[in-house]
Structures are given as C-alpha cells and as structure tokens.
Length: 123
Image 1 (cartoon, rainbow, N blue to C red):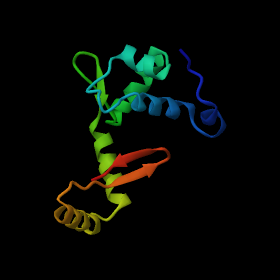
Image 2: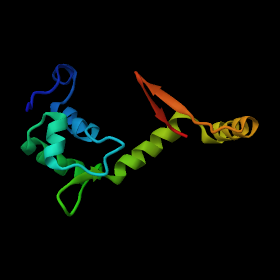
Image 3: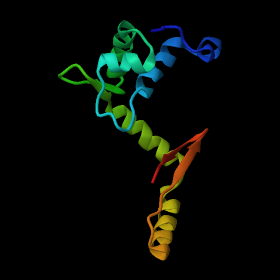
C-alpha cells in the first residue's frame, strides 16, 4: 500500500485530489459496487485514506455508500458525464446524421470521442 501520490501529482497537482480520482477510477463498467478492500487493492491506497476521501466524494455526490458498506458511483458523475456529452458535439447536428447513416446502411451507428489511447462512446 502507498499513500505517496504519483510523481505527476507531486509536481503539479494536489495529492488529495489525485487520490480521490484514483478511487473513482477504481470502478469499471463491470462493477455495480466495490468494497473498501477492493478499492484499496485497486488503488494501492490505505483504507483510512479511502474512508476520509470517500466522505468528501459522498458529500459531492460523486460516490454513494450503500447499506452494506460497499460503494458505488454517485449521481453527480452522471450529471458531469451528460454535461461532457453535450459539450463535445451539438446533438441537433450529430443525431440526424447518425440516423441517416443507420437508415442508409441498415447498421447501427455510434459516435466515439478519443482521449489518449482510449475511446468513449457518447451516442
């Protein structure tokens, strides 16, 4: 376990924020919820650090604590995702084009945004 932030966080970031982001990044599309030990294993952070930061993330509605003590991503993440989706492309322009492509090709159509080596499906 380590509470030492990545060198990039020490150089130009806020360590607590980097750790909070690591907690959120511990979740994958396959996870409905994660326990404290699972988050600790995935992030390398101490459980005490996770508990402290989780309380702030819960207050910001980025994380929720379930009755069984497990955690899941909170509703603020959805709101931020929707804001990002709208900021990337004008839906009124993109959706008619996608609809036309689908009708002409008889295939499904998706719109992805590239971020480094990853891509995220927006529509």
